[in-house]
Image (cartoon, rainbow, N blue to C red):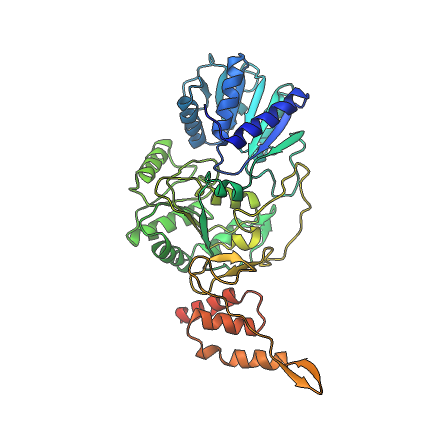
Length: 456
């Protein structure tokens, strides 16, 4: 099995820690960097030494995906999961969390356990399995080793090795370049938080509206017509409604969720891979781990305070594929304003991070929205790298008084700009007026003005 240079480095650093007596290591590496292939290499080596090893995943789609990867590199394995015939003969077993939880104490004790998407390990079903095997070597895999409550994963892992950044993988050609658009931000000022994230019922009331879905459909037709897209929603009802409206607009779309039968989910995924279904709507079913390289776009209709949920979903579309010039992320949830860009540098730690309470609607990241194409850009951008729109520079007007410079009365300038709002017809004109009135996010304000006019 031919590993990429950074995969070899990750394995080398992990083995060094194991030789030093560290028995629990977390490997951080971005979504799409090949963690399943890296696991197959590690467990294949362990199998050659007749070491019983488990690879634990938490969704059926990930079981099948892991089986395909292990088969492709010749790693013999069994499967411990409902719906699959058990074969405990191989030294490598691909296991589901749910099935293991029901069979604790009934299976041979593993010497090594590899945890896929290990940021979930604090969940009771996961931590119960972890506690049952204190003498095993535990290796965690995650692109986002953090928790919504801000607590770290140091309780379960003693050391962490960190892989390359998303930006580096894009530069080196291992991940796809991307374009991210934020045409609209929902008003969440009245949405409460439960356990650190937005209240689902209140969030659905905001996001499951024909106007929001209409924006998603129009942006799909504008940005990615005819391309395959995954679309994330707030709830099952929301996902079903969105899929139905896409179909009504003539765009082949399906909804799937955790309650969808396995056969139906398999058929939906197969249809999507073949390009017969163009938009696959779900809640969180395809937010983690699922590898569909040919998917070209992600439409995000679920606002979240979770950095993990944001990055994991966006990362679904960053895998390389033949003929894919770049991925498109359409953020109708405003998550880029909360969490930044997919390729921002981030410092990961097992120690966790202080949790800062943020007021509803408060933006944590400074992001600039293009007034022409709605691309999300860094706040320091002078022009849009996608459409070429040049952001207007508003000079500070000054007048000379007795040899000293004094600013023109700001309130008068704002009043003048406000009076000219009815005359502004284009997005660019409104953005300029918003900037003159002192709005920090003039693009967002301008969009609200335009949307209000359309709704009349």
